[in-house]
Amino acid sequence: MNEIAVAMEMLRKAMKNEPDYAFSWHSNIAMALYDSIRIADQEAINHTEDTLNHSEALRIGNEGASRFMKICFDAETSQDMMIKQPHNEG
Image 1: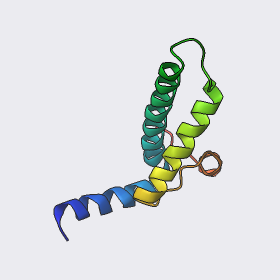
Image 2 (image 1 turned 30 degrees about the vertical axis):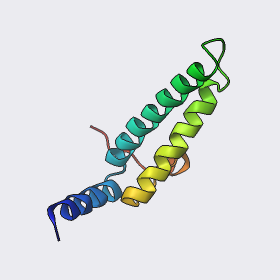
Image 3 (image 1 turned 90 degrees about the vertical axis):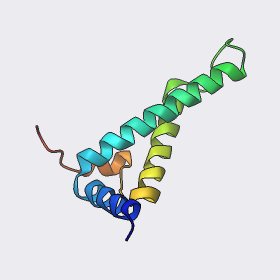
Image 4 (image 1 turned 120 degrees about the vertical axis):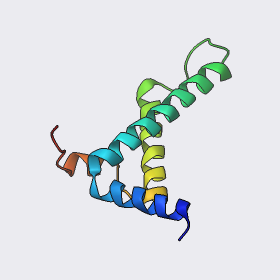
């Protein structure tokens, strides 16, 4: 197994075994998507008004992050799943 495959396997295991770690990645991906959506939305309408509101952009960002985490790491980070997971303290 090459170095990249080994690194990806280590990440996959960490994401599946440590829900808080997986959700930290999810949150960063979701916010990057959210920011991109809001900026693109504002630019598309020449800064006159937003066509996607905060909640819609946040929902799309979270759905995109959940899909990425599932495809890349086979980690379930959907909002419903994270509510059910006990989070580690400290």
